[in-house]
Amino acid sequence: MQRLLLLVASLLVLGSAQASEVFVTKDAQGRPIYTDRPDSLPAQKVNVASQSTDTVAVQQQYDEKMKAYSDADKVRAETAKKAVDSQQAKELSAADKAQRCQESRTRYQNMMNARRLYEPGATVEDRRYLDSNEMDAARESAKKVMDEFCAGQ
Image (cartoon, rainbow, N blue to C red):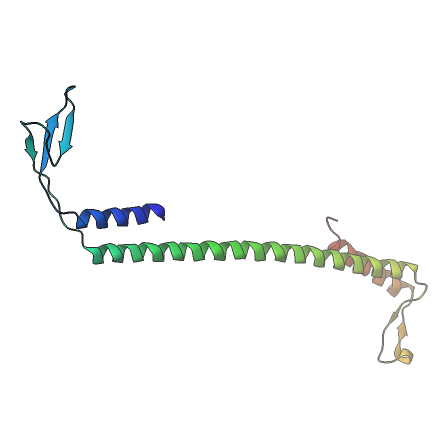
């Protein structure tokens, strides 16, 4: 972001600078010195090509870059939000599994400790009590459900 602003500012400064002549001279060690006012003669004139900066084009490029940065920030924010949502879903899912495991374990233990099991009816009088074979099948079914929900715990 700072580089882009620096680039825009330098382009504006360079665009507003007036073209002038550039000379090259040599110092005592023979290194070239570029200047617009030579201290000593002979100084060789250097042809420097310059052009004016189109401020509208620079502003347009700047706006496009800012829009691209904004879009990238939105994508990053959405990705982070999805990651947080996914993590929360996993935690809820784990909590839900633990709750179902506990409920199925309690149901199985109640079935194992009960002397009589029944199928509920619309009223207390409509209950149908299970015989010993049906009780064994119901207990086995409850064990399978418990094993399914409590697998890995």
